[in-house]
Image 1 (cartoon, rainbow, N blue to C red):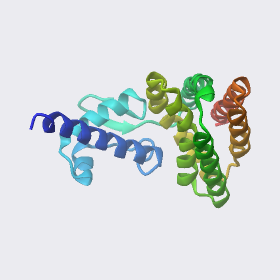
Image 2: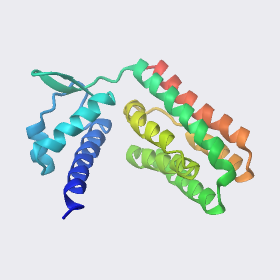
Image 3: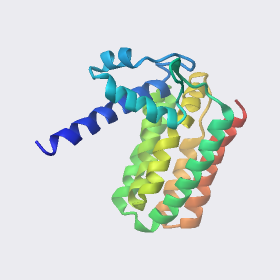
Image 4: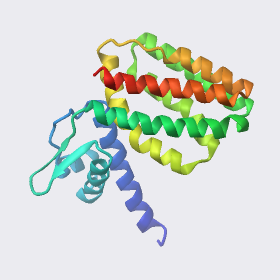
Length: 215
């Protein structure tokens, strides 16, 4: 009984947060849409308390905006916010790449290669969900191997702001050159070339910042 009370609350809060965040990033809840805790709690099969906690976290992360006693709504996709997020997330990925490359095993490289194959196939098929999932899986190898929890938390916090714009551009028929950049990154990692891996990582995230500039 001692472990159940705090664990249950944490899991419900995290479940509500992840579900609402993913719906916002996917565009299922559109920018400007008003969200109500009672309605979402019913849809998620939860009480209102964990949904309110999720709202507070999403406001802090920039996906929701709230005016007390008035409304809570999904924020617009703002180029400056995406650009700022890309700069921060890019810096974290450069950091974890520098740490992780000397620690990578052959199995880690193969995981990255497989993820990039799925990514390229998904891009070719126009499957944005699978493309972004595979992209996350590839880069998460370096985040995981680095062991830097602060970088992992920062990346997880700000990546959804970037993903919203990526998804929109993907839906508009935008092309994607990341599969080739991923190949270069993987080859640098396989060769143990830290500096080249960091350079390619910087190029990947610079491209996402430029995506925001062209919005």
